[in-house]
Length: 190
Image (tube, rainbow, N blue to C red; front, side, top):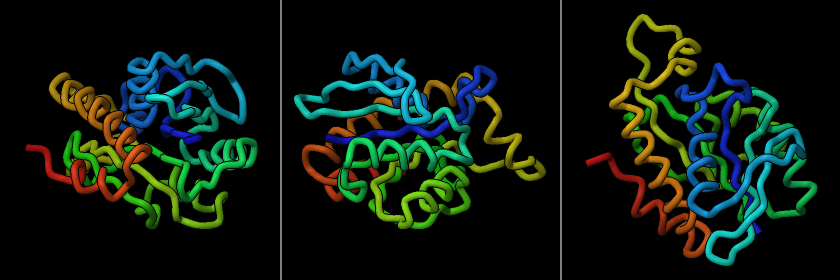
């Protein structure tokens, strides 16, 4: 079983913001595999289902971004998974171009408070993750204002395509391995 967690903020004003791309990818997976993500458990909205016969739990933490680790810890403990092999976290990254994917098996938080909190709650940084590029913060912008800002129409179109690619990458991570997915998806957008 895999737990797939998309990071974001739970209230309506954060819909379609750069910081909520993790939620958007969970929504894309849920739609593609007909999984309802409406059950409130473990400080998250969760959905149980299957991706090509493999059982998955999709989760959107309701703790707000900076406390995401509280929900992830509860999910990992309750479902007794090996988080180093069966947890995939999806989140935004300002150091990547809009729509670019970067898959990793471990690493620091890189300044991302949601990941920082997950690392603190798990006690290590070895878990699979997909970073989705939201573009670099323009000069003079406040970081919080930028990541909580909305995509332009053109960016939204790219992000929707990236959510689809992330869905495919997750399937590859599950059925092949993270290295195979890294070889295919860790490329600049063409």
